[in-house]
Amino acid sequence: MLVWFLSWLATVLTIGFFLSGFITCRSMVEKRSTENIQFLPFVTTLANCFLWATYGVLKSDSTLMVVNSVGASLQIIYILCFLYFTSHKTTQMKFLGFLSLAGLIVYLYMMHFITENKSRTYQMGKLCTVVTITMMASPLATMAKVFRTKSTESMQFPFSLMITIVSFIWVCYGFAVDDSNIQLPNAIGVILGLLQLLLFYLYPFKPSKMGVIL
Image 1 (cartoon, rainbow, N blue to C red):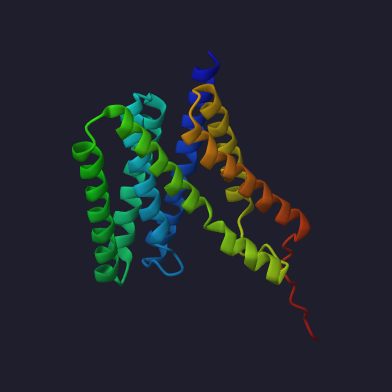
Image 2 (cartoon, helix red, strand yellow):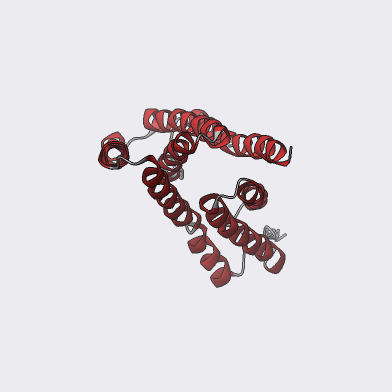
């Protein structure tokens, strides 16, 4: 019962988190431009979802399969939207092609060169852990900027709160199914999320008010 509840909760919250990308897409459509929007997060999230979905297939974990299949599908939509409006299509396509090639190499290695399923699942799990931890380390640069400027202007409170909650639910799910590959990266996500929330308390952002000289 507990596993089912955590599975349902993790699925709903994570897919809801992935759906936030439509806000960015709407901005691209309205501006007809990708100015100030980064391509990298879409691509890295797609790669991360692909790896976790594959791990879910190897483990026969329907929660991982569903969440990350939906996540990967959404990232493809966001990427297509970005490529349609960007003025640097050649550069972005080269990067996407390079990442696709790397993904194909990993897939071929895991599925064709490792014959034992237990070993394949183990190595895929560790790869997912490393990739996810690497992705979760990306906010550290923003946090360092907050320490320097003593302002959380460059951060978004809803995002920090959501990533903390989602990571915590996945930690609970990881313990429920006894999978350290799920526990570890999401525990780090909880810690980083809490640190980000602490920054909002320490350095609350207050928009400056322009004085009017009469």
